[in-house]
Figure 1 (cartoon, rainbow, N blue to C red):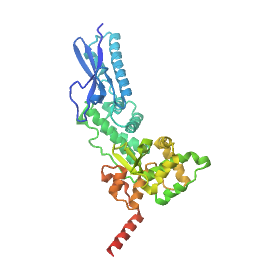
Figure 2: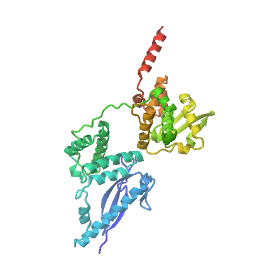
Figure 3: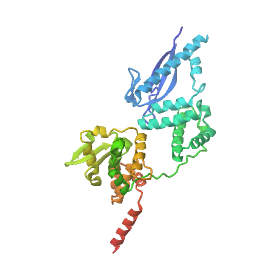
Figure 4: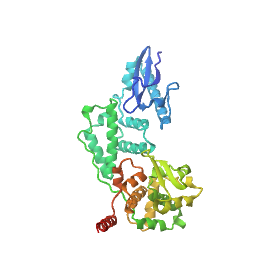
Length: 388
């Protein structure tokens, strides 16, 4: 009985792609001949241990190594089935049984691509949401199913599910990226590009922000008694109104990020989303309210920076808004928009706000800087006085 041997092989062509990564394949060897199966996993050179033949230094190394083991077990099972059915076991027969075109699964391909990516955990979860919707819409989705009609039908399904236009656009962008990946790896043909006649539709979205008097209502809100469980969420939200931090940045902070510069307290951190270094002078922002908040939590800062999921906090903010008599809907991210808007209302230069928010491009800051009507009046009066 001639047994096929299997092993993972990285960067067989000794060439990296434009992203600095190369494909990881499974080599099948029998009687001096070899064939290769794609794992759909692309790695950087430092993420592959050549001696142990395992993935290392990758955010999803454990899952990917498990996928590799399962893939090899799958090949061995196909080989065993050939023996049981009385067929001669050859590499050509094995390839015929395991050829992705023989039993294609676009859903499995997408899942593999998501786990193999270098994206942040939050981005991976976001893409998995699209995968879940695709599975609900078409549980048996194959590569052959991915055509122009499928794209329009999936969009219709998302719209009928009650999703916002921009949410639909997000999922369609994810799907387009998956289709492009399948084309890059030879599973789909560019000649039959499913997105050729489809255009992703979006609407301009205005982020909610709070007015100074609304922020004051939250500051004065008493949450004693049965509402005391909301206090931590409220304090975290207000802290981000004063500092402009994102949820991801706030929950990544630790005591080491609170530093003294020339004797004054600052927050110094690297933004999770952009990797840019941000320095915030706590004593100067909004009369030092952020610094007072940190002093309130004293030696329990690690607990202060630890929050439940973003969606869970947003649900609490809905309750808090009702208790404070604020009619508009706002989320945790509204704190960042509130920070930018109020700083500009107080006369801060747009480039200063850009620096405080950690934006690389000023056009990103301008999205946040909606001008309130009274700011407009204030600026016009200032111009009139200057002319006189």
